[in-house]
Amino acid sequence: MADSHKFHPALTITNVKSLVPVTLDNEKSMYHSWAALFTNLARFHDLYDHLVPPTEEIAKVAYDKAKSADLALWKRLDVAVLQWIYGTISSYLLHAILKRDDTAEAAWKRLEALFQDNKASRATHLEEDFTNAVFEDYNSTDTYCNYLQSLADRLADADALVSTSRLVLRLTGSLQEAFIGIVDFIQNQEPLPSFESCRPRLKMAERTIKSRTIKSRTARESGGPGTRTGAAMVAASSDSPSSVSKRNNNNKGRNNKNKGKGKGSGQ
Image (cartoon, rainbow, N blue to C red; front, side):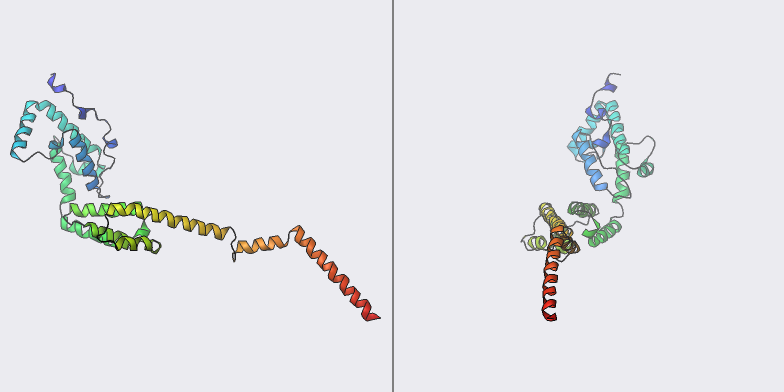
C-alpha cells in the first residue's frame, strides 16, 4: 500500500501546458515543435522510456528491471505521461488517438503515425509552401524567419532536409527591395552565414527602414517644400497681421504717387 504512493516529481505536475506551451493541432502542423518540447519534459523527469522504450540490450535490461521492481509506481507514472499527452493536443487529435486502457508509448506511436506517415506527400506540400513563401505576407522579419524555420523543421521530419545555405538563400531572396543592401552583404559572403546569424542583421535593417519611412512621412506631413502643407503655411504667413499692414502701407504709397502724377498731367 505504501509502495503504491511513492513520491515522484512528475506526479506533482498539474499544469502541463505551462511546460509544453504548444498545443498540437492537426491543422497547424506543429508536431516538430510539440514533440521537441514534450520529449524535453519527459527526459527532464527521466520518463522518456515511457514514450520510446530502449532497444539496446544493456539499457533494455535496466529498464525492465526498474519497471518490475516497482510496477505500481511505473503504471502511475505512465498514466501521468499519458495525461500530459492528452492535455497538450487538440480535441480533434484526442478523439483520433483515444483508447481505453492505453499506454503512453502506444498513444505516442499513434500520434507519430498521424504526422510522420505519407512522408513523400507531406514533403511535396511543404516544399511548395517553402518555395512560395513571401515576406510581404508577414508583419516582421522575426515572424517570417520563424515560418521558414518551421517549414524546414517539418521538411526534415519528412526526410527532406533543407540545407543551411538553401534556407539562407530562400530567406534573403524573398525580401523586399528595401533590404537590398543587407541582402547583397549576406549573399556575397563565402561561406554563407548561418540562418540564426542572419536574424539580428535583418532585424536591424528592418528597424532602419522603418525609421527612415517614418521620418520621410513626418517630413511630408510637416510641410516640406512643394507639399500642400508648405503651400498652406506660405499662404497663412502672407495673411498675417504684419503682412496685411505692410501691404496696406505699400498700397497707400502707390496711390499717393499716382495722385501726384494725375495733378501734373492736368496742368
